[in-house]
Length: 619
Image 1 (spheres, rainbow, N blue to C red):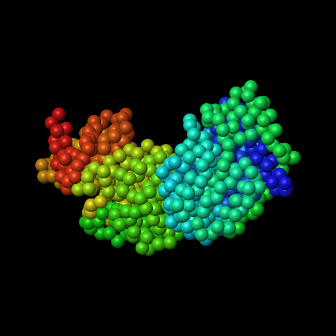
Image 2 (cartoon, helix red, strand yellow):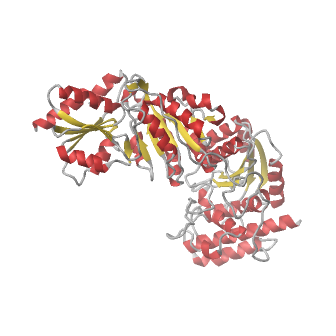
Image 3 (cartoon, helix red, strand yellow):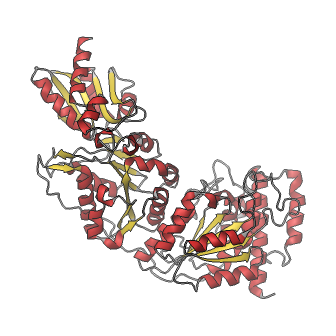
């Protein structure tokens, strides 16, 4: 046995003991899945990976993504063995005031990806690999997956895209320990089945005994020599390895050992450490990374003014594509990801200007969103576009992006019933509610090309979480001039007078219906306030409250379901004010038809607004 093998075995043994300590002390956690993967993690961190211990965000560092996030004690243990955490730090595992949470988040500074919802790590890794390629950065992305999680369809979306883009800088390692949470996996220990699946998709696949350090070193080193395709290492492991009475047994997933079982388990682990424990505490120095010591690229930018003139008829989705291309001209960190609808979202405009920074993700929205998370981690500014309704397919990935505080810019086109004849399957009617519910999210809904242009710039400078821009299929007239300013959390009062009898609050397509209603009512000598609520979250509560309390008759109108939309946001904002609120929204399942037919059917067109104003006046 050579010195390297002995050293790695000692590190693996130390990791297992630290995982036992953490979970027993916390009284919860996933011990057995840590025990199965300890040899893999030890080999990666103490042999294969290049990284600067003192500079976690060094652009040249190899990256490790723990896709099976429930094995978080193993992640914390390895950083302790690297020398950046202490035993006292680990004692805080799962405690309220500790960053060592049950599943990794960015409260722990050495986290590469917030995981825990399974099936997203490989997609994040693919995004990081593409970003590294764009930067000509020679790093390797290692992703540790559990065998149970690779049943997730999103994993196979990532497998396909990695092969399509020949991401040879991705190395996936599957911890094939045979057991899931409550039962055996579909494939069990039949590694040949996994191998056939990965190779069928164009990956280089290799099997290994996941508890044989010498084999792990050999296979991981060999993976570095494969330069024309992504690689997967299928590691045959035993869940609970090292504790004889836990090994390969169901019923222990997510269960910490009782204090009286601790010494028994510790004795087993120590007896399985054939090379013993590390002889002394010392800081590990891995091979240093190659490449740049800091990210290059723009850190500030000024978008040029648009060329739109008032009354031009322009779809906001088209204005989005033009604005994104213009932003790409002044900021080389901007990237565009689209789910095979680029000619509808107008992401193709960006592609024509910046093909090297456009990523075709095909019809795989879940993978697309998590790829964007990976690109954001590698210093990119990702804009992600598809039909607004199809973001619902990737809701879990979007939710986890919010958990990871990723600054994704999501753009949903073809929103609402106003898209017309395509019918309800294509109508985004839940998207505002979905995006509003996310932590630190921003939800924007411009009504014209000029506000769209300005808000794309605002999104590019929002770095605290997800921002969502809702665009419209049909052309709408430009209302604002090129010098009009739009800020996140603002609104525009387009009409207001002391004689107003109602305050109509709208956004996007229904803002134009509200303006039409204003003109109809003017002919009857009835005045109303009209507000363009382009920022739905955060809401300009101060302006809305001022206008609402002056008339005590508020009408919201939106091309969205009532639940979670603009009306609910306004109603909540006015809950402590003396204001009556009526919400006009889509309340039934739509059907195919023309845009105007559907707006009228839903009761959100100009005539419906007029009728509601008159009804409220007659009360």
